[in-house]
Length: 292
Image 1 (cartoon, helix red, strand yellow):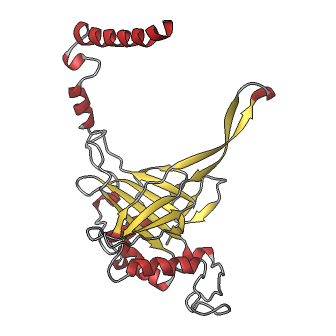
Image 2: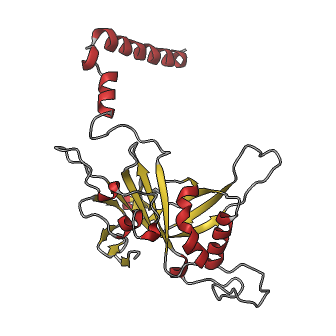
C-alpha cells in the first residue's frame, strides 16, 4: 500500500507547487519563468538570436604535395558539401581509487579530437568520386591497374605502399554563418585527411533523390575563432566576417587570405593557439607550422 501512495503523493506535491506559483506567486514579467524575458534574452546583443545549422561553409585546403587532381578540384567542394559535423573533444581518463579503497574517480591523462563526417553531392561528371579516389590512393596506393609490382605514375608508389604524411594532409575550415552570411564561429582543423570513403547505395526506386558520398575525416587538433562584439558599439571585430566566402581562393582573395592571415583582435579557444606562422598544439606544446 505504501509503495502505491508514494507516486500519488509526489504528483500531488508537484501539482500543488505549480498552483501556488501560478496563483499565489508573482505574475507577469516578475514570474519565475516569463516568456517576455525569454524572448528578450534571445534577442539580446550578447546572444543575437539562435543559430540555424543550415548556415555553414566548409573549405578544404590541401598542402603542396597533394595529388594534382586534389589540388585542382578540392576547393570547389565547398559548393558540393551537403552536410558537416562540428568537431567535439574527448578527455581520456583512467580509473583511480584513493588510498586503494572506496569508489573510483577518473583522472585525465590525454585528449582526443573526435572524427567528423562530411557528405558531398555526387556530380554527373564524377568529379567528386574521382577526386576522393585519387586522394585516398595518394595516401595508400591500392590501385591494381599497374599490376602486382607496378608503380602508380602520380605518387610513384608500389601496390599498398603508404605515402608521406605531408603529401596527403590538409587543413579544413568550417564557417558558421548568421542570417547576414557573416562568420559567427570558425573551426580550423589541423592535419586532416579522409580516413574512410563510404559506399553508395544505388536503386531503381531512387528517382527523386540525389546521390551522396559520405566521407569520414580524422585530424590531430583544432582551434575555434569566434567574433568579438563590443558592448558599446556592438560591432563585429573579426576581420574575416567582411570577406566573401564564395570567392575563389586561387585568385588570392576571399577566405583563403583569412586563413593565412588571421586577425589579431579575435578571441580564440580550443586545443591550440595560433601565433603568426606557427602554432602550439597544447598537447605537450610541440610547435607545428601553419599552412602557407
